[in-house]
Image 1: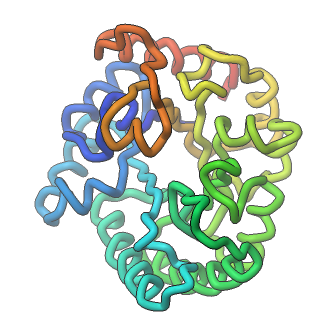
Image 2: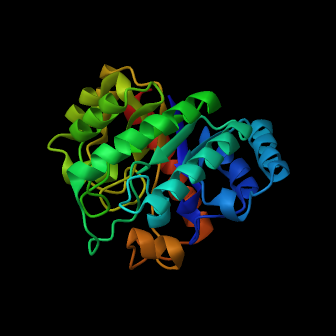
Length: 291
């Protein structure tokens, strides 16, 4: 199994200079740097810039994975046909960029939009039907680009369509593509699942990507989650995918607003302190998971 961390752990905005973080995560003991696809709309907008980033990762022996929360204007199951049209075009343009970057995993609430606006109408049955139909089309593009789409199971406060592993399994079975799989996140599971280890076992071979974070959104080992039980479940299913930490500990900026971090979860959070916590966390999960 490969271990990674999401670059926005260190930042207040979704886009940053990933060439800076690639050697950092390698030095801290990670195999993977996960990046936000927002970068392809802001910083890494040319093929030349994407190839430079790919080379930086390859030169440092770091694997790149990607995550994204589609905006309301990128919602493939919107009731507005024009939004759906734009959303499908967005993903059809994004997936070939991931191929250029040699990125083979895209995870997130790709089946809808994020973060949830509870003031908007929600018709779960209707939205699932539309989402499945359109995801079947995007799966064909993903197959051509050699990208697996991880349908992230989100908690009830951030999404309404897929809140449990069981719901996600029904979704991916309905799509019926080897490129559309289950993505679990321990922060969300801690809220929604009756038993997190059982959810991992239920996902089984359909689990393509895993996010790690405590119930308080800090790095593993700084909260109350039973990592030993989770590690046993991962060993039971012989999980060989990525385990990427997705801690959010800084208030302020776009990330703090969208994640709802209203106070710094790490006091006096200098970059040195964040580095120290990340380095300790990856050593911790490698030991506990034994994978």
